[in-house]
Amino acid sequence: MEKVVDLITLPLKIKSRNEIDKFFPYKVVNVDGAEADDVIATIAANEAGPTRIVTGDRDLFQLVDSVKDVKIVYLAKGISAHDLVDHAWIKSKYEIPGDRYALFAMIRGDASDGLPGVRGIGEKGAAIIANNFQSITEALAAAHAGDDRLKPLLQRKLIEGADYIKIAPKLVNCALDAPIPELSHKMPARPKNLDTIEDFRIRYGLGSSIDRMMAALGW
Image (cartoon, rainbow, N blue to C red; front, top):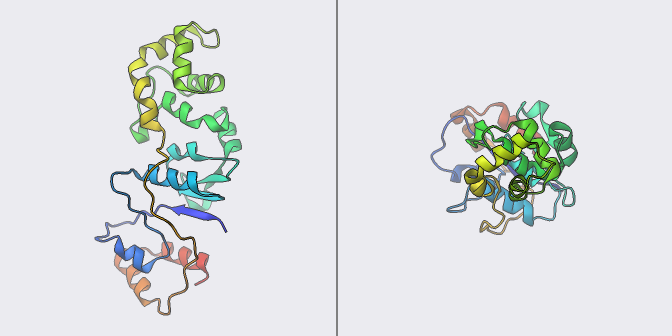
């Protein structure tokens, strides 16, 4: 059975996450001092797989793993038109090696995530670097050495962006050592009474989200 890390965004703030824990078959993992990305990354790194991570965040493309069968269910176009992101998808979309998305993102940046990238280097330049180097520090060293795999403009922009490059890996790379509690992957049993879930649906206007959950579980 596939293990799914499911991120839920409710239309209204819920006063207590305990309601989700109590009424829904989602595992809500709370880790003090850890970012959600780091929690997801740690779970994906430590599970045997297969794992499917459901998200609209491109940062998590770095977690794709062809050996452990970790893929991203990418929701930029909605659940009904989602993309299933693996290394082949990344290679086709960005024209880079599938396992170098984090390097590509560090250089290109991502305005939606507040990531500046290396000033003056866009997606095309970032792809050139990701195709020729395995890390951003390796690319910077090549720029200083006048490596002919980098055009002079790219060399100059990398050198000018050296201060950002020092911190870029920490900004982009997910931590893989968040202190995750032990998780059970047992499928939840159908409640004897679904009235509480129905009340939850009405109170928070969840509508079809509940319908999809019930259908997936066969409730």
